[in-house]
Length: 294
Image (cartoon, rainbow, N blue to C red; front, side, top):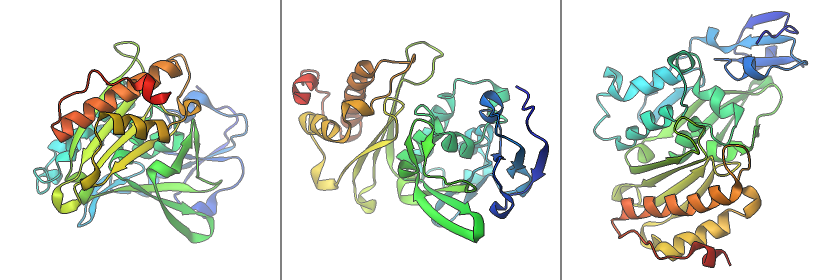
């Protein structure tokens, strides 16, 4: 859509330039879809020239302006060769990108940071980065810098902790999470529909603690993480009880892409599938999750 209230396009990544009526522009796929009558200027982050992806000693840094297409290409790109075998969690990148169910035009425009900052429950970049313990670097006016886990940055449907003028500079995925074995599950009501339930499991290597982490998104209004230490991996009943405790009924999302009751039941089902896949235990097909909730 045309943003007919916008009068200026300003190439800047400096929060000091922000003023009321501004919006940070990366890919702009959501910004141009929804628009706002209060917008007066767009602050163009793509002018910053940040490297899309960088392998460091600590893990992987993903610039906020990294496009979905650039991220999708990374697991097979030369830059990933030195870490490809060690970072088994790179297997999650392409399924999460595919969860956009979008055309190549969107993939070449939409950005990782924009998807997280939009904070839709079904945002697959939130799913990916939260599941891998991604930490967001946030820049603010006055030269402030702060770091916050993506799982805490997103607080609800199109809600997050970003204050006016703050921008998401990058997301850093730690090497320990990238070394983990992972499992991915996604459901939608139609073959090419928006995610109604998206869960990612992670079993850390013994050298990294051996913990089991299951992250629920899409079915919930914000990311929900269940963490179990190496000595306390749950059985089916224990996992259901952990979901009971972590996800009250009013936290399940409700829109045309799935009723809360369906999202809730599928969250239990997919979490159990992930638990059995990563721990090697038989799938429990008899556990009564409704009874657990009672």
